[in-house]
Amino acid sequence: MSRPALWGWIVVAVGLSALTIPWFLWGDATLVAGIPLWLWWHVGWMGLASLVFWLFARRFWGIGIESNGNSRDDSPGSASRADTGGERR
Amino acid sequence: MTVAIQLGIIVGYLLLALAIGLVAYRLTDRTAEDFYLASRTVGTIVLLFTTFATLLSAFTFFAGPNVAYQQGPEWVLVMGLMDGIIFAILWYVIGYKQWLLGRQYEYVTLGEMLGDRFASRRLRGLVAGISLLWLFPYVMLQQVGAGTALQALTEGAVPYAVGAGLITAFMILYVVVAGFRGIAWTDTLQGAFMLVTTWIALVWVLAAVGGPGAASSALEAEAAHHLALGSDFYTVQWMLSTAITIGFGVAMFPQVNQRFFAAGSKTVLKRSFALWPILCVLLFVPSFLLGAWARGLDVAIPEGENVLPVILAEFTPVWFAALVIAGAMAAMMSSSDSMLLSGSSYFTRDLYRPSVEADLSERREDLLARVGVVGFATAAFLGSLLQPATLFELGDAAFSGFAQLALPVMVALYWRKTTRAGITAGILVSQTFYLSSLFTTVVPSAYAGWTAGLVGMGLGLVVTVGVSLLTTPAPDERRAIYFDGLEAD
Image (cartoon, rainbow over all chains, first blue to last red; front, top):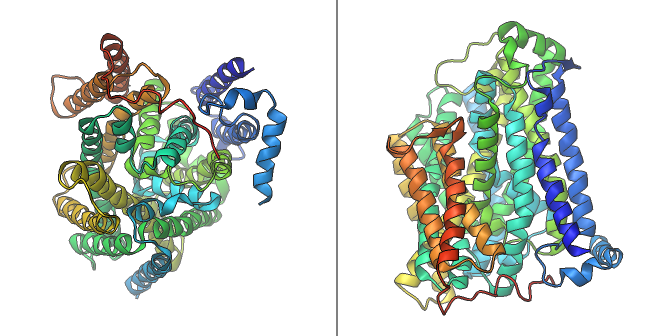
């Protein structure tokens, strides 16, 4: 579980970085509500990034770093329950 | 009258900050770890905003909108990528690992962490020395910014040298008294204040010019190519080079890197991580859009002046413009006071203590740390009177300089086979390369559109890995400490 998940998250990290700037709108000057479309994309993308980071922090935090990460990752449910314990404090 | 209102707001703000600092002082233990890191007890909101306010200096308020004014609003994207995404990922990859190591082995500085792993006082001193080399001009830059802003705001009533001097004196007083805890608290105030005033400023200006549609039409009439993504200035190579080097550089900036050690718990780190991109975009969009739209607003920007203050003076009441400038000064100070504190910790812990006075009592180290702050700030102020280059060039050079450290450090954190010779060579070669590209003509500063900073990072990576493969680790290196037994709580 741990290794594919680690590689999966590396791909997600690169993907998030790669499309923060909407390269596919290069040269485009379309305005939506007075603001360039490419800026709307960026704002939405940053919101998505926060959501992805939140998900990562909840379920996969420690992957690739903590030496007990493997045993933890076998039961992500219990790990996330432990975290919400922290939230309630 | 106008000048009096403006100065009143700034002085009032400084007094408020000082009051917060005094409260923090009363809570402080007289130990170096408390002075530098508030004994690793920082909570989510404070950690989030102290990192935010530390990261965003005069750059966001003055240089950033200036770039957007000259070249177009794409600067939002570059900053969003570098700070909102790349830095956030590094906050986990470098920062979380540093936090775990720091708790386990009581590290306070990056040099300490590396010196312990590679059993090398020389490496520790090298990392501290290089960091101070880049940090010093950057602190100076903040003072130049403060002096210029005060002079512009008061229309010359407070001359540049006096303004920069007053801000320096205040910062010394503040840092020496308040330490990390006080700085983090005022950062929280400053960060929230910046965010709110920037949005009010945007709404105010837009209300005056008739909304975003009207502002964009005006910009299109003045400079049509600014609204299309990309230009001769914003090339793919330049945008990526800038975002990557500054993003990695930020993580190695002493005042930011040291914050990696300061979180109170894992939950604090997780929450800060998830909120980070949204916080960045919330500040960058209004700040740089104001700068970009200013181009179409038919307001003359005098040569050498910053765009944002001129626009505010034109479209908003005096007291509000003064509030925003006070916010910008606050941003500068919150960056500078953190830099002074970190600079002083690098000096006393990594250079002074290992080579001059090894067995230092906690009280004496605490005292030395405060003396270090005074020395560093005074020297940087003297430098700011000479004003060697423009804000942007200086800032950019410092970020790329720090970026050269990032990859050798990451290799050491994640690859057991890294050797002392490998990381030392990687750091030395990339620094020499980048410095040569700045100050000599032997090393070019661009490679098919990619910057020397980015090329130097690649060079540092290759040399660190290559030399590590070719050499064997010294017998006293502690190869396992970055890997075994690392867990939270």
